[in-house]
Image 1 (cartoon, rainbow, N blue to C red):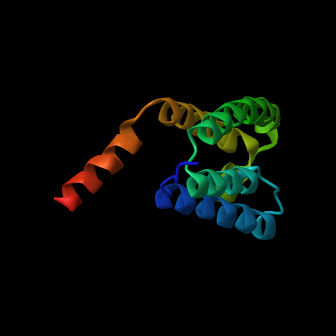
Image 2: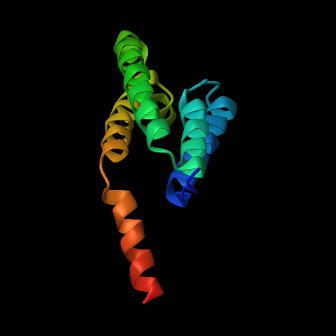
Length: 125
């Protein structure tokens, strides 16, 4: 089994989403899906697998579509405050949809993986 490189940027993004989820739980009494997606990002960044990234991307798109629909339903009762915007499912639906598309593209392309190998080649010279 090949050893995968860990993506510390992906792990940091996952930790950031988990922290945001905890902040929303305690400040706004809102349970957002960012904690689950953050944990999935931490797992994907730690294992470095291509398949996990593609599955995460498709899952984020499905969750994002559901959250956008739910957020549009709640839009008439929303408040225009920072926590009112960031704590609603419409914001997280757009965030999930964009992140899902990004994860699918990075799962199929070699831009990140070939960039790492080029840096390692130059460092070994």
